[in-house]
Image (cartoon, rainbow over all chains, first blue to last red; front, top):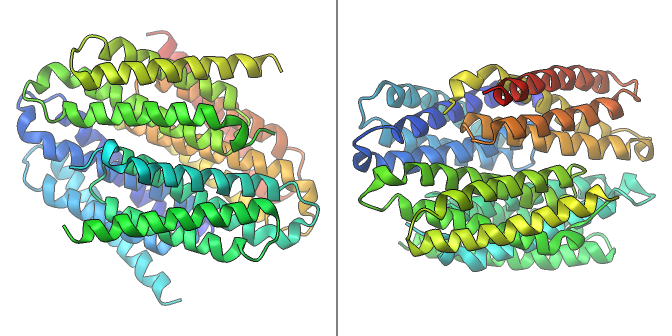
Length: 115
Length: 115
Length: 115
Length: 115
């Protein structure tokens, strides 16, 4: 069984994506043109939740780690697609953190599928 | 977007499975022949975590609900496979709750794939 | 140690409050006068998260159950204060579910303090 | 409202404690004298759950951050008390990570009480 030590770089990438999504979420809620940002708020929220769960699941060495990593990659990819439409700095930062997280999660998913 | 109202029967099935897994987990830790139950303890724990996340995600109307339901079905199926090996009543109860939850989650996953 | 069986009515009250908060959250995000609802969106979100954690923690028989119930009561009380300001039906439903949950959690907290 | 940026050092301390608790949990389940470690397994689990929730709550800027930090400090203090009884390296590492996390959480709780 895998341990938090082996998953450390993946956990860190998920924490960064979670933080970036939450910062984008919180920042969006302070904008004056909130109507345009509703989809972004929802997608940020969904992605932050999935990242937070992935952090917890990898830290615990959940036996479905590969599937959970695949789910997290999907959530990040949806977040990248939405945040890419907005020019705010925090949206661009979110894209970057989610891109890194999605890559790491796809790598983890792939490496475990080989076992 | 779906709401907690639409997901209510699925949320309830996941709560029941989560409770059954946690009861099995807690009960296993009190047994004297703990060595034989290590795998069961781990699988109970993993399944309870995934069910708890699914409860939260469905209640929030997460846009990855279909994928999350599929993950939850997998966790329940692994739990059924392990708990079926043990004759304790709480393990049998866990099998039953997880079977119901897995069925519901597969139904939800399938119905959303059609959309 | 306590089990999911003993906590069942408390878990159910927390699930109801979580669902009501999430429904209010989702419904608020669809309103046209979103600016007035920002505080409500945030408080709904915070309360739903705390309720979801409480569900999980009680189901697992977490040894800090009394403190966690106290935290959940506080989150519900904050949600009641905010949702009471809005006349939407879903806000009123949220007030009702949170009131019930806060009462249950305060009862649980009190009963465990006596032990 | 506070953001993930302001909470970053606290989030990191909670991630470290969560990882250490989960490693201790996983390692304990592999020991041959499992009976002596049941309390430790339970306390590790409880603390890991509370740390994981605190990570998520601080990242989201939950308005009950002070209370949640206080809860996390309590969970870490209980974990320190239990893990201190065991000489395994991973238990000692857990004590250290939980001590750091408890200090950080008490600091956060105190600083917010002053506001």
